Length: 426
Image (cartoon, rainbow, N blue to C red; front, side, top):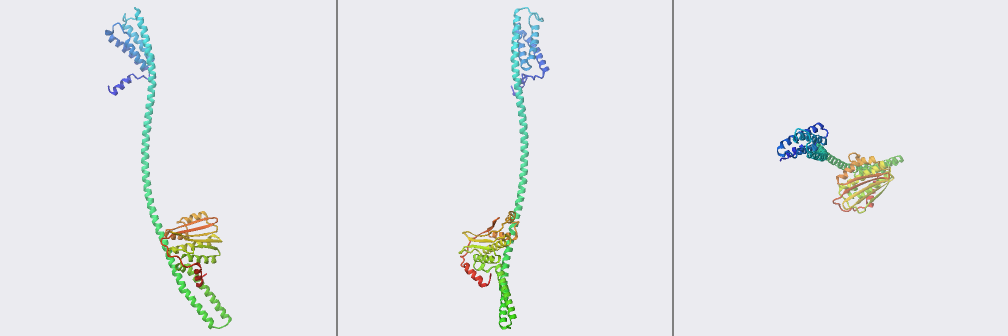
């Protein structure tokens, strides 16, 4: 027997719902009639025994499928039909023998038991059917929810893929823009360093021209004035005028030499950054009135010429900012040489820098020309420039790597000072 056939057979014995009253009683009446007909068909075989056997089958079926009420109706109709057509005397409801009363009682008891058992089984089956229906509905709802969830998941996957693709494209565009910006910044930094290098070369040339041309011319004027003073008239007015001219020429010579050395100090090429830094710090202290303590090692290994020039320009710019903006009364310059780098620290006791301006200084794209110039020079050498400030003062730290230091500096601070005094520079 196939599964479909078995399912249909089991469906015949499935209890009808309580709400279908007409259908249940109609089916019970039909089963009673069918039991009477079946007893008539079996009458040649059964004869005058087992009159109510088919009634039992109908009652049992009705009790399970239709309920207690329809089963009672089926039992009454079936009993009356069988009694009328098959119990002697047939076609009559008369009772002629005592044994027939026993059959009535037995039929009544058997039908009562069948109805009770069938009704009990029907209630269990109805509860089971309700449970199965609830589970089936829950399963269908769960399947529908899972289907909707799969659909939502697929849609989400599609959206995620679309968004991922869009983000990937945006990331590629951003990376391309960043590459272009980095290249532009690199070119700008190189151009800035190149301009500063050209500026240094121009300063060197101007300094040389001032020293060699204008300085020599003023020196010649001074000598001519000396000759004129010795051979001219001896009047007091003439001597006083010549002396005034000599004073002006001496002042002009000092200014030209000082300007020449500030543009490009020859000591930087001759004796190195250590002596040039001491000379510049001493001159800065005299001109500005700010007490500057200089801490530089006596034996300082010279780096490359370009590295010395960068450190000197950072020192110049830092002390100039101290004089212009900090309001400090004292400052300190420290220059130290370690195994692989040179460190320059310039600190003051001024009012400090506000947080907003400090953030702007630390942002290379927003800092001023002087700060940007110092940072570009140091970065070109692979170093770093840091600015730290609070209400107690400001510290500027420049760290420059040194790959191949040159021979140790031979000149001392005293020799440098004597050389400057000999040249007339203050």
